[in-house]
Image 1: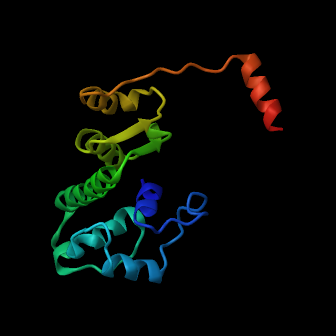
Image 2: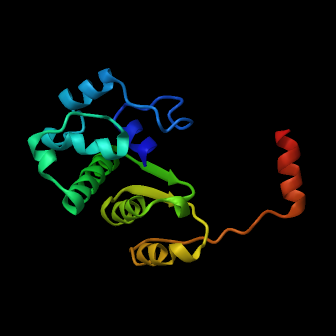
Length: 165
């Protein structure tokens, strides 16, 4: 999710996807706190530190939120960012390897699928035992479709590899 939100907040870097430990610079942090072009509640913008490694100074309101309340409010903030983005025009979010997500990221994926209209979400994941509950939550969402993809045949796989070499 980090790359999605850094991009939406205008803070993505070309090399962000290669090195997730990169930190958002001081200039971008100041812009986010001052300009806040997506209309985020300024007192809660520091909640983005959890996801976007923005290292914004905590406000009294953000400091007061603890544990589940903090996670819930952060998820609400992130869903609102996506809602505003989807209202501006057609939007697609592609998430690969969802089976590797931590539980908070999986929960956010379900919230986004339920609460953000006008957005095409594509979640690619392997079928694994630890994903059964998550897949069931997604299956219960109206308009959710699952497509099972099979593996490539040996001939197609060989051609793909040789074309890339």
